[in-house]
Amino acid sequence: MNKVSLYRRLSQALLVAFIAFVGIRHQISGGGPEGSAPLDSYCPFGGIETLVYYMQTGQFIEKTNISNFILLLAVLILGVVAGAAFCSWLCPLGTVQEWLAKLGKKIFGRNYEVPAKAHRVLRYLRYVTLFLIVYLTVQGSRLVFEEYDPFKVLFHFNFETTTAIVIFVLTIVLSILIDRFWCKYLCPLGAVFSVLSRFNLINIRRNREQCTDCGLCTKKCFMKIDVANETKVSSADCTKCLECVNSCPKPEALMLTIGGGK
Image (cartoon, rainbow, N blue to C red; front, side, top):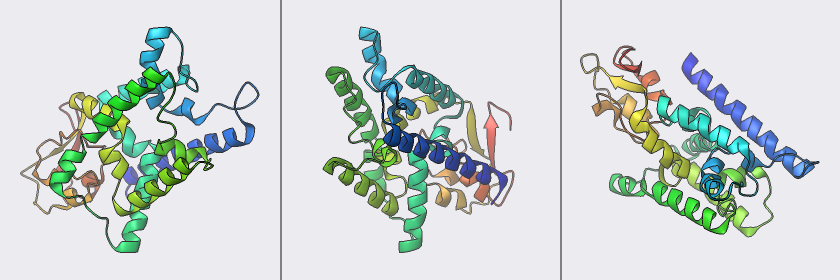
């Protein structure tokens, strides 16, 4: 394992540990003035959910606060600079899905692939999810998605409702069978990153003269981007995990660039 992969995995593990600690602590101490902040306060998407309501009323939706705005701002800045890098370097749910996909590969020998045509269509469900969550949250003045959010279900450590159990089981099963199913097709924050990725400063570029057309980079991409046939990996789905760069046998064939420089 090279240093870049090691740093990414360390970053992922630390964030999973921190969020798990937050969820467990809240279950033990409860909420309110004497308790601890709920998991919702540490979710950048919570900033999107409460933003419109805050602009209309000057108040936060219950379970959200200023921390959601701060996290959202940080994530938006990261999105402009490095696209969806948050998804593969920091997102705890993305990390769990990655771990489960590796488990699935060991069990079944491979991860199942959604057919290319279906994949292209299903990607747009993220935008539908984003619109519905924001609209219904503002209309209902509450976090309508929290009962169905895999992030909340996995790290809140509260499986007392049938809904939570079903979401938990579906998340585990689908993540084992299909690499990052939620990230690819349903994640509302992923939809936001898809828009921001159009403007990001950090990109992956392929040097055609150095490329041997081995195709390893495309095989390594869990977001199903055809890296081997790109000059600049401009896909909004790219999470800058750098697995394609790490897999390349020619050091100068795939490069991470900032602006126009290497």
